[in-house]
Each structure stands twice: as C-alpha cells, then as structure tokens.
Length: 263
Ligand SMILES: NC(=O)c1ccc[n+]([C@@H]2O[C@H](COP(=O)([O-])OP(=O)(O)OC[C@H]3O[C@@H](n4cnc5c(N)ncnc54)[C@H](OP(=O)(O)O)[C@@H]3O)[C@@H](O)[C@H]2O)c1
Image 1 (cartoon, protein in one colour):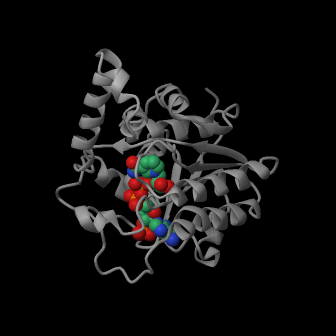
Image 2 (cartoon, helix red, strand yellow; image 1 turned 135 degrees about the vertical axis):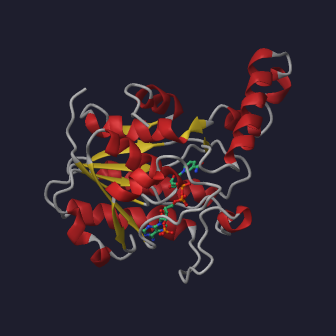
C-alpha cells in the first residue's frame, strides 16, 4: 500500500476514537498533532490503557477550539491530512452521566449537534482548504443505525458530508459511517457491545431472526465496531489515494483490517 501522509492533524485526538487514531498513525511513524480545547487528555485510572503514555509523549497536543480557526490555523501548515473526530451523540453530555473523560470544570457552552458535529468540521475544512499541502480530510460521520437518537445527529453529519464531497477537487474526502464503537479504554462500551453481538447471533442464527428483524435494534446490532478497526481504516485510507468518498460499515471493516496497526 503506498504511503502518502507523513504528518496528520487530528481534531479531537484526545477523545475516545481520536486517541486510537493517534496511536495508529504513530505506529506508522507519522508525525501527529492533536487539537482539542483541553489539550492533552485527562488520565483516569479506570480508563487508562497501556499505550497512553506512549501517545502522551509523542503527540503534539494543541489547545484550541475547532470553531475558532485562529487558535489552530498556523499548525495546519505542513500537514498532509486532517482527521476530524469531534461530535456529540446526545446533546446532554452522556459522559457526565457515565463519568468517563468528563471535565467537570469545563466552562464551554453545551455542545449542540449543529456546533459539535457540523460547525467544528466545516470550520476546520475551510481552514484546511486555505492551507497549501493539505490533500485529505477524513471525517468520522455515523451510520443511521442507532435507534432512539435525535435525527439531527445524522442530519448535521450529512451536511458536512455534502460539503466535503462538493470540494473533493480541492481535498480528498474520506467519510466514515461507523455504528457503535467499543473498547476497553471506555469500559461502559463493553457490555453494550456484548449485548449487541448476542442480539446479532440470535438474529442471524435462530428462527427468532424473523421476529427480531422488525425491531429498532436489529440494524444497530450489526454495526458494532472495535474502535481500533475504525482508526486503522482512517490511517489505511489516508495512505491509499484510491480510497475516497463514503465508507459504510462493511468498507470500514475491510479497509480497517487491511493493515492493522502495531498497537
Ligand atoms: N463513540 C462511538 O461509538 C461513535 C459512533 C459513531 C460515530 N462516532 C463519531 O466519532 C467521533 C468521535 O467520537 P468520540 O466518541 O471519540 O468522542 P469524544 O470521546 O467525545 O471525543 C471528542 C473529542 O473532540 C474534542 N472536542 C470537542 N469539541 C471540540 C472543539 N470545539 N474544538 C476542538 N476539539 C473539540 C474533545 O476534547 P475537548 O473536550 O478537550 O475539546 C475530544 O478530544 C464523533 O464525531 C462521533 O460522532 C462515535
């Protein structure tokens, strides 16, 4: 697989998926910059995994706000690719409810779907287009498989997708539409993923499938992805100039397992 990018800028690199993306890039020897409002991630004994120290030491953590290009624009110079990994699933912070990675002293206004999912990406994409040399923009969108979620979660993601595709002559868009992601780094996700996989087994392998396929969780059960697979799909996609456009769950699994990272 040809390698194009050597320096990437991960918006939200301190987050759940962002940290896996940073690790996957570092494992290829790439230079990694991360943008987030708090800079380096907060460490929590219950969520820390073995590789965090390595990531902490090797990533350049930039403190800034994706909504305010002046806080990060200078750092885009020299980057080949941008990865956007910012978004909210619920406008009321579910992190506060499950107490993972939540900064209780945060003074930031509550994120809306429009500000977090859409405007952060549109601002960074605009700044990236104005920066010579940035050739790829990877955006973590979402599959519309999750039941009971406000439709604005998906509609704001689709707005960004359309904007990126409209400018694909200037910057190659890689748009990932994952479903639910899990990892031991966020323990709350493990029982949820296990439940969804059990449901999938019932659905696929027993006569109950005929009944279950009409339930809202049927599609979601097939969408479960290990976050490292998504991270590898992003890094493999950036490396391969043939990868462009929208990647659905099956594409993410295929590209994500093509060349797993070392971690
Ligand atoms: N987790 C899943 O199962 C899942 C499934 C499908 C799609 N996705 C998508 O994947 C992406 C990443 O999700 P995640 O679970 O990793 O989210 P997360 O853990 O909440 O991480 C979000 C990251 O974005 C940063 N951030 C938030 N607002 C920012 C701003 N205005 N400027 C700069 N940085 C900002 C956060 O750091 P600060 O707070 O320090 O700024 C953090 O680093 C999102 O787009 C989400 O919709 C996730």
